[in-house]
Length: 374
Image 1: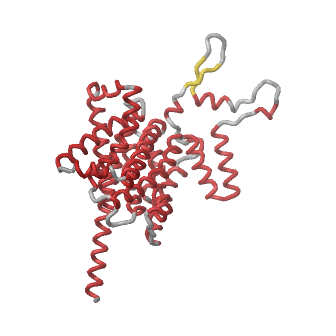
Image 2: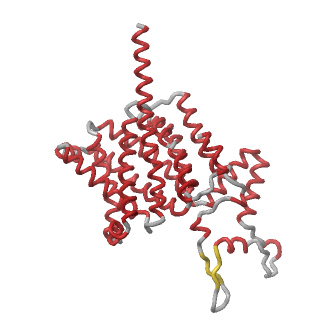
């Protein structure tokens, strides 16, 4: 009996190790994908075009794989099953939405200030998975998820002093037209904000004085610090970061969508007996909305493959890594809970932040301690 118990324990340990190995493989694919998405966001104007162009490669490659393995008949059967079609459509459309939003966020905000908020996905999953797929995590698993989530929170909440917070480059470079007669003048967004701190001369007195963004941030941090101590100051800094970087706020919402998508993926895997065919069915639904938009609004977007070969190669690689990440993630679900797999997968944030520093010259020195916490 003891020998059988030990053998069962060893099988469980090996299963968990294999599950985490698959999850970390998905993490590496995600990290590479994040940096390529950031590169593409600087080259292709519309986020939805990046989603459509990269996903075309996925669907073509998957169609070839399904055909080569002789599974078109199974695909036709899956397409007639209402439960699988509903799961594939819901997950595919949510992925299309979140991918377009992520591209938009990366266009607005530095990579190292966006991706850390994706670490909140496992926290959402602890709740969602309990109801959708009936997973009850252990205390150790909950603590592991919390460590990664807290590390991501601290990564931005304590990144810099209020007056030195990194701003979105799109916000910094934005232009605001002001008065000044027929000639007019162009002021940067920051100059416009700083001018608000100057008292007006219209005789309205101190009641008309508006404070600069830095002053407002300092006031907010001081007020919350008095009430809640260091926790309050940390929350105030987080609020300031989100206000200064709209891409970070978008990514925080994407984290919740990713949590729902992860459970929909697992439900689809449980209801199908062929992973390849289910992935192909889902990616067809994912591709449909962005491809329709591009073909109607800007069919010339496909010229990027002939005009700029490097961008075309990057888009193809984004698609390939997306499929590799999804396959590895779904394989990990054979051995570990969804929230654990996503927590391991979200360690890609570390590589993405470092990639932001190496490839896009983003400052991350202040965040290094919290990267090591994660």
